[in-house]
Amino acid sequence: MFKLFHAGYYKSPASQTKTSDRNVEYYEIELYDYHEGATFINGERFTVEKNDILICEPQDVRHSEGSYACHSLKFVCNDDKYKTVLDAMQKISKCVVYSELVPLFKQLYRAFLMDRELECDAIIRKICSALYYSNSSFSPFVR
Image 1 (spheres, one colour):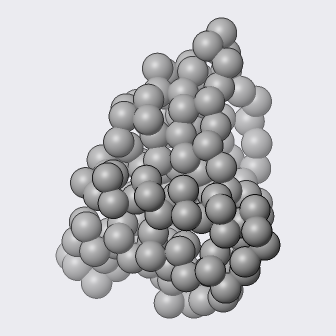
Image 2: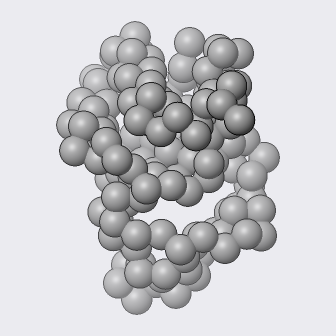
């Protein structure tokens, strides 16, 4: 089961230059509407653009430079099969299912605000599945 801790849309201040390093506590998925700068995960710099997806796992260290806006969620995953999939995904990639994911993020926000835990679990699984099946390079079984 997935336990959701955050779901929302974030828009940074236009004047933001750099966020502080922080340790990632939960799995995090962010779907960007725009990003004028870069994000750093475990010291590695990633240029981020509209329609990019970011996936971080617990214990990653990250910060961002520049302003951005994104759909975001933070959750705990207690499902070993999904952990294997999430851990195999690239940290940053182009999201080819952007138009499919945005409505799911919006559904997730509503379910989260209504404290509908089972619905949140189902929507997170849909998001992860859409990402996994849209890009076979995510598959831990593809070489």
